[in-house]
Image (cartoon, rainbow, N blue to C red; front, side, top):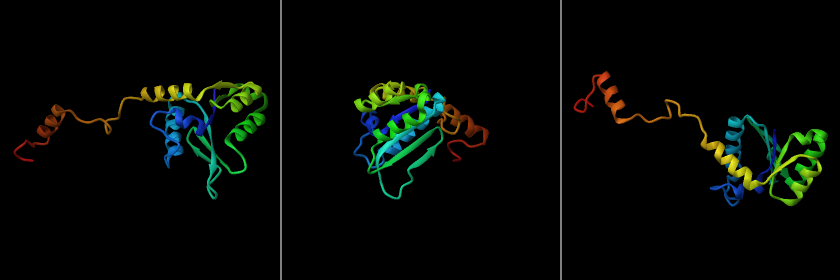
Length: 158
C-alpha cells in the first residue's frame, strides 16, 4: 500500500529531526528512501513553503517529494491528490496527525496512519537494516594480524 505523507507534520515526530533544522526535509527524505527500499513501498511526501525557483517535484528512488509553493498548503495538495486518485485512494495510506488531512483521507476512503505511529514504523524498519557489506565492516584485530602475516608484514616491518 503506497503512502501520502504530510512531511512537516511528520518531522517533529521523528526522534532526531527538528523543523528548525535547515536540512530537515532532506533528512526526512533520506529516512523515507530507506523505508521505501526496505519495505518495497511507494512514498509521496508533501512539504509546505517551497522556496521560489526550486522544482515542485523531485524523485528520490521510491520517494517522490512534492514541494508546495506559497498560495497552497501541503494539506491542500494532499487533498487534491486524493481527489485525483478517485476510487483508487482506498489503496493508499495517508500519514498525518492533522485532523483536516485525516478527515480528507477518510472522506476519500484512504487508510489513515498518525505521524507518531508512522515515525515508529519508519524507525523500526531502519533498525532491520541488512548486514554491513565487507567495505562497511571493520576488521577485527585477529583479521588485521592475519592480513599482516599474509603480506609478510609484522609490527617491526610496518
